[in-house]
Structure formats: C-alpha cells, structure tokens
Length: 234
Ligand code: HPA
Image (cartoon, rainbow, N blue to C red; front, side, top):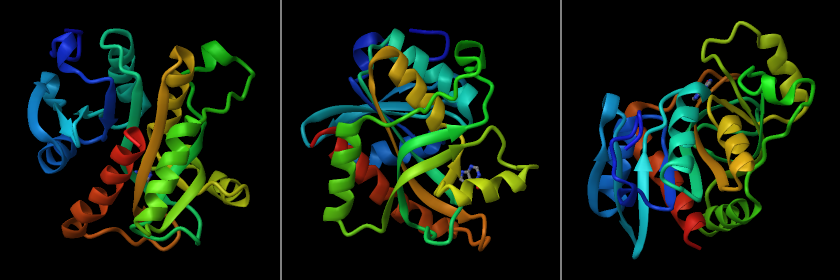
C-alpha cells in the first residue's frame, strides 16, 4: 500500500494502462479484461487488475493533469515496480488534418509545465515515447485501419487556456493535439528506465470546436484501449 494506492504489491501487474477518468478505468477493465478485480479505490481513483489474452494487466485512473498523474505513476513505478505504462485518454485536435475520433500516438510531448524546472533548469528536455511500444501501437492501429496520427503533442497545465497565441506557434511546428498528462508520464519513464506511451482519442477540436457526443465516446475509446493492449503484448 502507498499513500494513494490501497493495493497489495502483488495486486498490480507489470503493465498498467492509465486513463485519466477512474470510471473509464472501470469501463475498460469490465469491457476488455477477464476476471477484473478492483485493487484500488482510495480517493475514488479506481484501479482494476485482470487478464487480457492471458496477459496480466492493471487499468488504473491517473486523474487529470500532470500533478495528479505524477503521484500515481511515481507510486506505480517505485512501490509496485510497474514496467510498462500506457496512457489511454482523450485529447483536443490542434491542426486541421486531425479529425474528431482520430487516434493520436504521441511520439513526444511538449509542455510549458514548471513541474520539472527544478531538475532541468534551462534545458528543454524532450519527453519521448518508448520506441518498441510506439512501433507496436502504430502497427496495431494500421491493422485495424484506424485514422491514426503519430507525432508531437502538447501536455498543457490548463484546460481553459488563456494563451491561444502559442497554439499558432504549435500548429506551425506540427503539434497535433493537446492533453494534460503525457509529458510527465514520459519524463518519469525516462527517469526510472520504464517503457511509456500515450494513445489518445480526439474528443474535441480547437479549430472546428466539434466535440464527440457522449454516446459515441465509448466506441471510440474502445479502439484506443485495444491498440494500447496490442502494443503492450505484441
Ligand atoms: N485541452 C486539454 N486537454 C484536453 C482537451 C483539450 O482541448 N481535450 C481533451 N483533453
């Protein structure tokens, strides 16, 4: 048990999928895993462990934003020895070629976060995905004929941004989408020698202002969960 995770060490698998929303963890575990077992509910942050095609996997909420994800990922890595951590979540499309419902595989995650400034100081560290996971996820997405984009994303500290002029610079540099967690996940994985990836579904769009209707969310998110599971256990 840790401060934020009430599970026994053996209750958490080496491979952990991390949706932001704890109820999406419940939904994904009940939909995709055999014999899902609730292993955490501290602060309502639900986590489940079960089997997918004979492989043990934990699906655990990360909460919204990098400070929240950082708490869970630090504990999953340091106390539970998680080796492979894949974020599954939603993102906002930033460029025109990215459409609503498309899948984004984040090769790298830019940020303006001050979380790691005390470590990096003036260095613009580039948080990057694990190549094997990225490669496997790309193949899994291709096999399913998903509309997939692979590239740089922006991990924002704010959902309601007051600095849209920076969005234009990001578009000019082909930043595909915005979310709020991947940069910290990739930074922690780099620090502790673990494998990390973020597979995202475009749920809203910053240019067109479209948003995925709630009844369509489950189906679109299911595609992303399958890609993440196939990438983890290729
Ligand atoms: N901004 C930040 N995070 C998000 C968004 C967004 O538009 N959509 C889904 N996660």
